[in-house]
Image 1 (tube, rainbow, N blue to C red):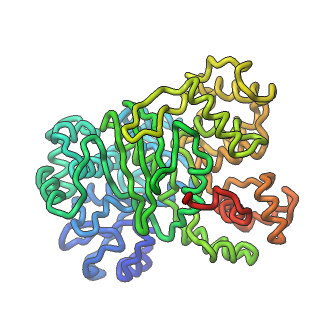
Image 2 (image 1 turned 45 degrees about the vertical axis):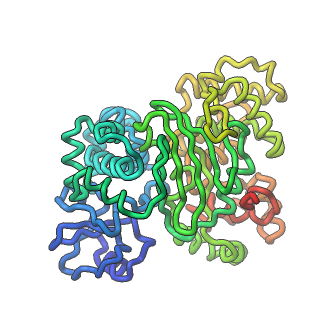
Image 3 (image 1 turned 90 degrees about the horizontal axis):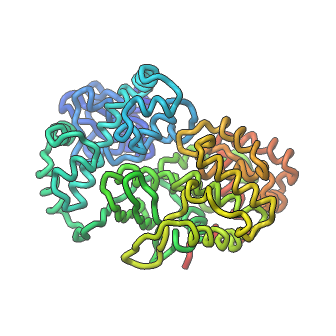
Length: 490
């Protein structure tokens, strides 16, 4: 979008928050870059130039605006709606892969050379992987500076910087303030006191956001010991590269309140990325809802409660195991089966607030389980053990960076995997916005009540008009049934 100057100028002059994250406005006279909704008086048109990423702005010598804080914009919805190499690279960079594995590690995951990835990112985003990762490190550093009492040296290495000098130089260059000045400014503003070991932050999103199905689904399907709904917040444990964490996510009118407790602050970038992915916070609800409204039978559902998101997962392998456990059983039965696995094979954790007891077991931990101890039909035991084996040996990858169609083809070859299981994994674990469940019982009931075709083939043909947002159409169709997943818990 940043190449459409006229459209970008209109968005800036109207302070349209819908375009935050789509592009950034750099002001030639002040050498500052802003988000489109910046509250200051818009600059003259001849003084504006537009960039596709904060990293590109920083590479061009612009610093972040202190008013609108463009580094805290929602991510571009492009990376969630696409499965090409650039989108997959951006999701991996968001997960901190460049900091942990370098550009060669990023390229290896994508199956390209480092030079090819560099060229593709430069062409589309105006910055290479190192510059994009540097911009993200700066944002992580700012969060740690403002929300914790960690010494600056610890902040530097936790944010992914290789040296304190690089950390200091980057923060000064990006924010035009020294790290100590950022902390002093944060301390002066009216904020709750810092709790030792807890990082409190706001997760932005594009309005509207309807929390009912999003948090209702997560709470209704929560695995005891791993997840819970408490005091208006969804809480769960997280398995992370350097340790583990516990997160509490609370819906607010203009943001999601996030409280993170991490055993190692180096996991902050990935923890934030997984929380945003879980809640689908980088979606563009206006674009989705506008297209779904074109169907006269869907329009009343969209108008009644716009802004529905797709509830995802923090770990693709975990969700795949839970999807198999949930085949042809009730939500309560699926939770019971998952809780037994957690108790037997999950890693115990200490939750200061009580309620959460374990991390969900990894595929490696489940690889040695005895199928005879599973209270499942024999065919489903085979399905589960085959899935776990493929995940444990690496022959099956279920991450935010995987190719959607190739992974579908791999899943359908596993015993006991039909279209429903494959599509629900594509929707919630892989994040495909066009995943569709025409054989789902709730979808078939909704189709019958609304007057949509009720057979899977006919419904799929009708749903072609909803592409590429069929996963969001599923969320609206599920609301026809009065199920706990559609309501925030009391």
